[in-house]
Image (cartoon, rainbow, N blue to C red):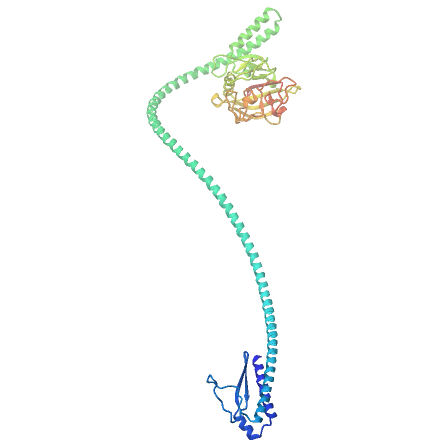
Length: 507
């Protein structure tokens, strides 16, 4: 655009010069050709812009260098001809006018150029701003999406990190526990090794001792074999004698039964006087001379009256007084426990319950050792008679009953429950040990014999205790340490009376 402006300016100046020449008269074609030949370029500088003019020169005019050795670009010839001088003046006037016009034109062009440049800059800035805004919006959108994705990834990483940390903590705790257990196991192993070495030494000692004993036993065995042979011969002889004695004993028993029937007949025939006492004395003597092992044998011998009798249990040489119940469920029962009025203290120790205490005609405990001896010689049944303060009298019966030895803490073995004192047994049915206040053999961390009192097969304090404290009527409820049978009146009702009795299972 600036180049176009300068072209128009040069064209205007050239046109002005031509008009000036035509205004001066121009002197014919020949002169015009000579003037064209002598035309030279003249330069006028105004500010930062330079203007080039083509002006005619007079033939007599010569160029003279200036003080700097240059040629003046605009030169006036002196003395010029009058017509040329006038032309030159016209030309200068036109030149001044053109110069002024050019300055105005330049100012106008500069103002227009500035406005257009500002507009161009403004449009460019607007376009660039819109582009930058669009790019920024896209970048912000992508940045927001990337930020959201990064937040999601960060949350997942944080969750995974938390899980890993929790897992590491759990693994650390497990490792610590395993290390402690390993240390404990190591110490236990070292202890076991020490014990093992001690036992190995003991085993070696026992092996050497056993070899010596085996040799002695071999000698003893040979001696015993000889003795057994002799005993076998003696036993064979005794068996023959025993068969003969059995035959005689059977005859004697038949005679005894006939004698007893005769005695009863005589007693029935005799009334009052000293004769009756004498006959009863005879009967008593005959009973005392017989050796019964329980009340069932007494009953089978014809003595069907309930009372105190003498029996011989196991290998005991002295007789034991027992109370025989000859009426309940067919008779033949040997009582080994009776509670009726609280007259006997049942808070006894282990030895008392072992040997027995009380009076057979009143409250008593026959003794664990006697019951063990009796139930070890045959199969026995157990019957438990109960009575509450309201007059109810149920019972519990077991087809099989046995007490183990004292070494096994008189363990209780029961089987085959029936009866009316509950749909199920209140006694633990199998393998429960006997406990007293000075011998705790129950399955509870506490001592049931101290809490519930008396001696009994408590197990874990259990459902029954017929040897508890005797409470009278009105004071017998809410008593956990009384005489209880759980499946009859519950765990805190103390009963009025109880009786425990045994007889052979095949009676």
